[in-house]
Amino acid sequence: MEKNIIKAIIETAESGGFTAFSESVPGVYASGLTESEVREEFLSMMQEQADDIEEMSGERPAWADAEVQFSYAISAMFAAFPFINASALGEWIGISPSLMRRYKAGLTSPKGKNRRIIAERLSQLSDRLSEVCV
Image 1 (tube, rainbow, N blue to C red):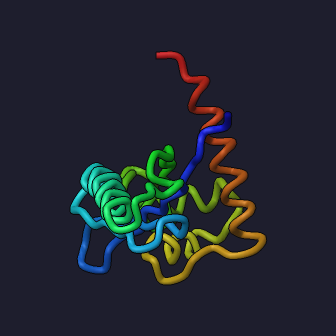
Image 2 (image 1 turned 60 degrees about the vertical axis):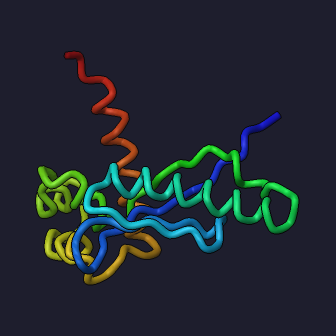
């Protein structure tokens, strides 16, 4: 039996810190000053929502015991990993450094071809970093 997986998106909050939501779990929204706080808050809110639904309907929602996979909006990635230089990353990916800085600031989001290119290159970076021997 395949495990149910919920995808949650971590974004930067306008007031600072982070927020998280999932389109698969209506009504569950979390915020925190740190990435760890928002992850914990999201999982807690998800369980509270499942408990409330079960109490009202007598049935536990299908997503209640799902595994949650968190993903970053690109501006949240830069906030969570502040040592990543947006301009240098843009050059390495092959996207205008100034556009990458706009993504970092949350002024715009990657779409279409740029979104695909960024995802592919970040995946390649992840693969290369996993080869580091320490």
